[in-house]
Image (cartoon, rainbow, N blue to C red; front, side, top):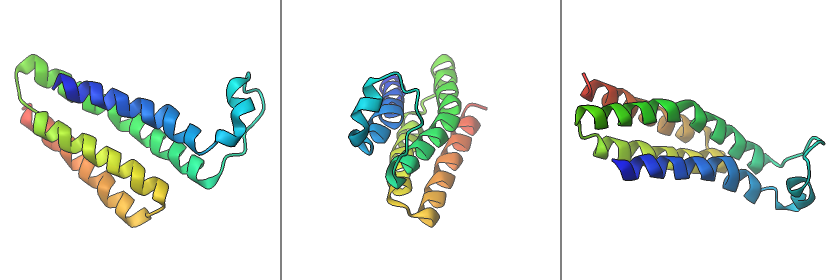
Length: 121
């Protein structure tokens, strides 16, 4: 389960840094500067930022559940892996612009979090 916690933090780095920057490399001067001016991002970069914001909303719940599981000796490795995979898929389908599929994948990740919580009761 330690590996899943670390992987979820690595996915956070991808969400916060790698994805938005990969779609805005033409703004390298802004990235290297003080970032005082507003930046006009493209559609893909904006989608990546929204996917990142959504990940930031669910990551604390995941980390809390995983830490509780470690303390209680409950094995949530499989569910944790499924959650992490669903969140990676969510980012991909969000950036690709597939709204219905995105919502289904988000709902799957939410159900997995609920299953994790239920396993701790």
